[in-house]
Length: 306
Image (cartoon, rainbow, N blue to C red; front, side, top):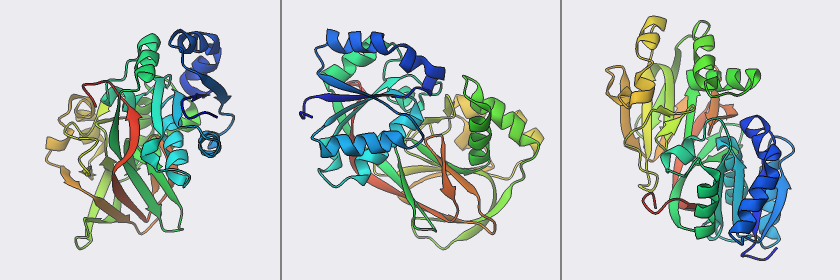
């Protein structure tokens, strides 16, 4: 591939098949902006990682992902895992097709497809932080938005098992609430001595939104070299229900049972393995270390966000 040619990856699952059904419309928009491109369809979980890695090896330097947060995250992993060129030499754009589109929401990427394609064609970009989750078994996963563990990961697993929809996370939360119990963990931020805590959920946030619009880290800055660590201590079911609105109105960090601060590393261990999600995808289990990789990836964003 030529460096100025775009690899456009369609996720046939995102948005309940919307990208694949709208392939002709997407091609028309690309041609309208004279964007030289090749099309690829992601056929299975993890396929986008392979497609991106192979395209970069073949000379590709521009990627447009027509999908949701999970598709974008897989593209990030394909970029970060390769060693052909520095990651910041790859231009990554998104056409928001998923039901959540939290990364696009945080960065004001237009939901209107013609505007989103026009933005990609403009190549207006910024270099932003990435996150890295390293697990006890030696595996690792990069992420671009938010990682979480505890109740959050349980909700993500339930959401994936039942399918996607605009209210998938909230419905998964309500469904998981009756069986989930707060769990004991050991947490260390920036190398501090580990401390014991009983948590409901712990987020490592680069972006502000997750879960289809939840504003869990309203002060997060994507290029400050830090996570916004948001740790929610144990709550009763009634407390969770009474504070659901805080997930969406930006007041979660101010709750008395929430500890919020910035840091560059987060280490979490637990007596029993806890699920970990990153960018809305189950990716592993504790013990886990989250690290910020400052200004590690180049993304197409509107001028204000850049």
